[in-house]
Length: 535
Ligand SMILES: [Cu+2]
Image (cartoon, rainbow, N blue to C red):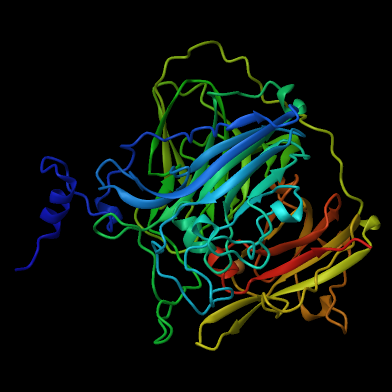
């Protein structure tokens, strides 16, 4: 007997009256029927230690759970921090240190196909995790090094594993950080399964600016996902184009066909006619977004990933690549009764609905007068002087082919396991020239430090000396875009261009990493050690 998928699905959901949707077909999924969820705040488990001095401690447990992506979907198995997806938002104050005990209570079998040919996948359990606080100025042992992974109940641990309680000093400006999984060779699968959450650092400077505050400040995590007809998460088990061996094999790109915001597919948010602050995070594996508002209203950007801009800027649109964040204000004051879409000028493969992220319904009554402001000047500008750099590095992003005829994306032609070559001195300033030889962008992320973008320039062979070093001249570069002109930890390296960044390696030394934040690339050797050396 052949089964009727429509009836099967309704039986599964147990409600024959419900509208049938096929989760694998975005055309059948009604948008804007679910309200945008706002992730809960993480609560510390204790605020003291034996000596009675204050210590803020969180206990966050990774476990499997069932999640509702859409009103008309059956529940979907995901992984979550404290059983929620997205994970709970950790909110801290600048310079107030916290500790987090990250625990792995995940199932022993992975939700998704594990490729056993990638780096770090030999003799390691399929389900392994380590938490990276993305954007943190943090000691190496709490950074979430990919080889510091641990399996369920710490039964097995990676070679860099040293401790189960991580410490975050929060010694940095207020900013929009996020925590996510970073385990070697399975990061793409673990993040796609749901292991991501916000971590917000607040500071005094920001508080003085009279920006919109909660409940008018909302984090927005954008991801693309794809589902099987039964509502389970889909992730491909072969490369594109497929290879006969190995299977499963990681694809070098995976674009989902639905848009998920804070865990809901194409949600809506009811707002009052006033100003709202949004911290937008692209937590997708590969997909970048080019965002704008359907009513032509501007975004008032106030910050980049790791802090405020010098001055707020008005943007009609902006591109946000994987792992980038943007801190901005939308003013709904003049739109009472209107519906406004957050639009996406599609990057990557097109598909139904991908040109829309979510809907704002300006339908709530104003609870109290909106006294918040969008200050023009936000924070003093402290630029790093390029003359103070003691070292320049030219780093080439290149394509090779691996033993299985799959595309391999490398940094300076080296694999993850090659000896470390990026070894800046403690307390030194360096300039890095990221040379993208591909015909598509790669978002490059450095752990530990924030950096400034000095600029970009299309390159030719003449731009390099005989040793292959880029002949740097600041005047040659096109300055960063207005929305990139603040403290960053991810940069879009444009195809055929040199992207030049500058940073100061201070406060911490030890083993960190730098990598492409396309997770399929990061898992397949587009990641390198970053070792800050102390003499
Ligand atoms: Cu990449």
